[in-house]
Structure formats: structure tokens, C-alpha cells
Length: 451
Image (cartoon, rainbow, N blue to C red; front, side, top):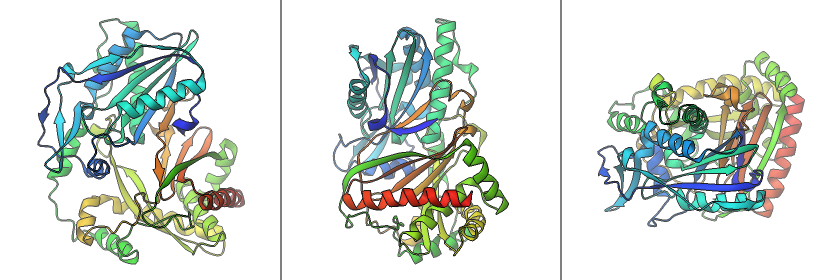
């Protein structure tokens, strides 16, 4: 899986087809299931506007030959019917965000007129506009299907507002849609999507989250959450180097994509990590903290990291936003191997804190004091373990994110058979470019020193 952003996405030229969902024949019903915590936090950023910019996520993959448009539409309709979150739309009523559920049988697909003869830049521009238009935060179910038709090898792209998907979901969408399309090609009108593995509904997960009335105040992990936020005065941690923005200021988003370790380098890096009681993720976190410290930051780097919550088999193949967060403080020693050895057990201990749902933590601390919109975080995904991973290289699978604004640094570490790659987003300011440029160079130096 290649993790990228829309401004760096470079599809081969061809004819662009797009389909958006049509809910005009649907009569949605107000659901008693509220948005999940993640959805509520995300949808609140829409403010009072029903057309706020979308933080969408998209997936793409290749198929052999030209697109069979009928099979593609059938496959996409089956994908929508298969995943409960794709039946949801959200509206604001009396100041509250309300979930409205649609019968998937009443949701249609509107095909736009194909755009012929686009080169790579033209395709990217059209796709970007179409995704922004079709994936709003509020309104009917918001997603887009697109296909770049070519005679030899075509590309399928689909995007969703973040309320409906997480990074793990992108792999599920690719695997499902790939299988559904191939099935509809092989058995026109007769393919049964029930042949795919069972997939629970994220709406049911949201209902279970809302009904969780357990008392977490005496949970052993709560004291450590409280200690973490007490040290940070109830403020989420920020990237430890100056990015050139005062609290409350925003800037356009800058992007950096790079491979940190190739396959050979990763093998050596992982061996050293294991010898020091650490995982690859712990090794990357230790290297990040050491790099920041080498550039003038303190000896401690506090960060939040997301974890998936697909602990039940029911959710293993479900599309939705199945994540929580856990806090970690990486403490730098004089020697990076000592930092690495300390980070391994610290990360394992921090993972246990994810057992407490974040809303209960926020209630216990009396709410967050947020100085910025973004939260400094480092995400790690081993794409080799996700559904359909064996085909990712063959079908040129991509996870594509939108580019919006930023006021802090955020990092996505992805592991594949090719090594470890890093996607970064941060404010597009002169100070941030200088600081992050130095940080990336120092990070690569520290990683090589570990090897």
C-alpha cells in the first residue's frame, strides 16, 4: 500500500468516469444511535456551515483492461449495501449532530459525463474537485466512486468523508471492491456478495460505544491518563520544534513523503529493535524523539498515537472509524540504543491505556484545553497484516488523503514488504519547512545509526 496525498497522486492519463450517491428517492429515518466519539469530534469541525471542507480519505487500485461500467456500478452498490456506515448521513438539528439512516436499496448512483483525454495533472485536478464536492461532512451519505478507463490497465478510485472510514478501512474497501468487481464481471447479474467474509456494521459499534456505562474512574489505567494530562495541563501535546505559528493561527498544509527504510534496512533495523526489547514502531518513535532532541528539543517527546479497536472478529472486515488513542512520553538517553530500550516497554505499557475510551478520560480531566486544531500524533500501520495485503503491490494499491490546512505536525508511518515509509503533514510556513527539513535529515541519520 502506498500512502500519499491528492496533490502527490499521479495516475496515468485516461478517460475519467465518476459516480456520486443519489439519495433523492430515499426517505431517511433519524437514528437513535448517536455519532461515535471520533465522528462527533470530526463533525464538530464543520462549525455552522453545511458545506465545510471535507477531510476525506480515498483508495485506489488497478485492474487489467478497460472498465466494465455496468459491473463497476453493481460492485459499488454491493459495497454500499455491505457496510452499515455507508447508509448514514449526518445533519445538524437544534445545534446537535443527528445520524440519519438510509435504506441502501433506495440509494442510487449518478454518473457524470465522462471526461476524455485527461493527462495525469488533469485527472488529479478533476478528482480533487469531485472528491471535495461529493464527500462533505454533513448531508446525505458522502462518498465518490471514480474510474480512469484505459485500454490496457485501468484505475478505480473511491473516496469517503473521514466520518465513515479510517486507514484500516481503506484496505478493506480495496479488497472488497476488487473482489466484488471481479465477481460481477465473472457472473453478470448472478454474483452473491455473501461469499465475502462477514462484516459487522459500524453503526452497531457506535451503539455499543454509546451504551457503554461502565465506571472507568477506578480502572488502573485511568491514573496514568490523569498523570499524563496533569503534566501537560490538560493540553494535547504539540510537536517539540517551533513550526512558526502562534496558538490559534492556521496555515496551508505542507506534505512530505519519503521512504525511511528499504527492505534490507528494515530487516537490520528490526533486528536491533528486537535485541533491545522494542518493536519497529517503538524504534521509529525513539528515533523521532532523539532527532528532535538533537535539534534542540527537550529530552522528552510526548505524543498521542492511534490504535484500532477491531478487537472482535465482527469488526475485522468492517468499514468504519474504529480507532482510539493512547498517550506516550519517549524519554531520550545519552545513547540512542538506551532510548530504544526504554521506549519498547513504554510503548507496550501505553497500549494498555487504550482500553479506556477517550470520552471517559476527558470527563475525568474536565475536558481538554486545546490551543491548536491539530494534535501532534504518530500513527503506525503494518499494511502486511491488513485484508487483501498480498495483492497490494500487484494492483498498485494507494491510500490517498486530502490536503487542507494545518497548525501542528502529524506523521503516518507505514510498513509494507518494501520497507518503512513516512507521510507527514505540517504548516506550510518558512519556519516549519526549515525545522522539518532538518528533522527529516536528522531522523534518517538516527535511524542509520541504530542499524
